[in-house]
Image (cartoon, rainbow, N blue to C red; front, side, top):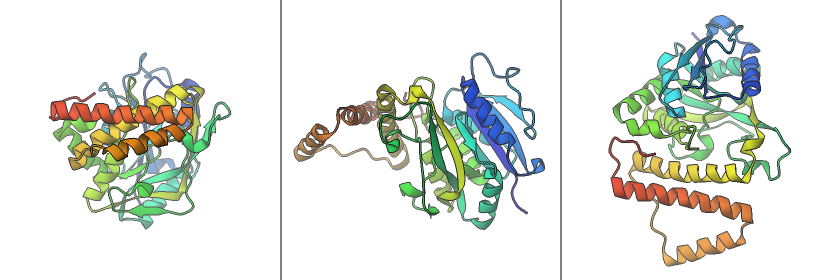
Length: 309
């Protein structure tokens, strides 16, 4: 029997017009209502979302409040609450194509060896972009063919968080990981920090279970990019968070740190920075700062089960 689906929308103080479009995209799904449910995970928004938005037209629609801040905890709570065999992770700035859930269900049937699947992502920018689309981190992902792997570190087959489809075996294993070591719950963005890597860890967890991960051409969604995320300052904050998060994740997952650069390495980096545009140089410097601050923390704290942000 084909799996049922839980669509789990994680949000914190959402932009109302974007949230309305996300909910409308969910309402337009072609999958029959008896095959899926809808959960909105309110990550302690102020004021609370309960009573302020309508989930009418969404099957078994309900709001769940998760007070522990951060996307990792919102995902964890979604996994705990979901009743489906598959969980679709939805963000409050993403619009699913009408056949998204039908396609996810079909792909889960035809690719039983995949534990996590991710979509193509088309961006819609609130303002005309000043720079190439690929410079806006996470805004767009276009693939010509399905790509999957059980190599934990194979980036092209690693789904991003938005729209990812997780089997409950993977979701349960991720919840267990966080419950046994709270440090994993500190990855993922919060209101204060643009951290990441919770999606990478979920995908790697699928590989731990002997399953694969993939990015699928038939899964498609639209990503709404607000003007505030198109600024140089935001891109630098994102670069810092990525550098910090990837360094912490690699330490927690593999016990490794970036090697200390040699004199020649430092000279080469300085040369590369010199040849970059001013904006690219600022972003790369921010990423480097994030990496170094993560290394400094790890070396000083020898991370135990404590908060590292």
